[in-house]
Image (cartoon, rainbow, N blue to C red):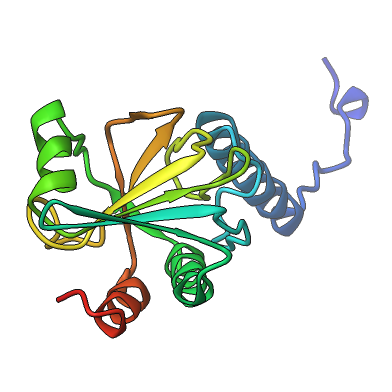
Amino acid sequence: MSLQNQPTDKLRTNVGRMLFVLVLFLAVGYYSTMAFSTRDPFWFGSSFTARPVRMIVYHNGQRRELTSAQPEFAALADAVQASLAQGVSHASGIGFSPESLNDAYTIYTTLEVFFPTRVKLHSTFATGEPNQMLFPITGRHSEQPLVLLGLNGQYMVNAPVLKTIEPIRTVLRAMGYP
């Protein structure tokens, strides 16, 4: 073989373009994986605009139902929206047993919130589409800003830990709950 028959052009590589394509591929892969596993294309967001239609405050065995016709309803509904709009911190792995749920209703201070339709709480893990939420204010698991998500009367496990529920606590204190 003679040297005249060999190609003389060098292969040129664009390292910048190759790195750009690699980073883009990894970003699209990460986003797609998260969107698929959470079943939410906006998993990275923290907005929450759904408005409750009914709320129940449980305190020491007493039950107080609030609807939009009552004066405290608007402030408490705004507090629920504000707390949920702050976003989710992480999954807790916590679920309430029937006994814990009964204690939340009969012994401790708890807020139960009902929505007219299913809602979506954006997070990095699947939260489903609940139509009710339970916020333990005092008692078991109240040391974390926890919210149990439920659908048609059944609460799910792996409750999200919110970044804060302080707006809810503030309004409940103003309503006379410790």
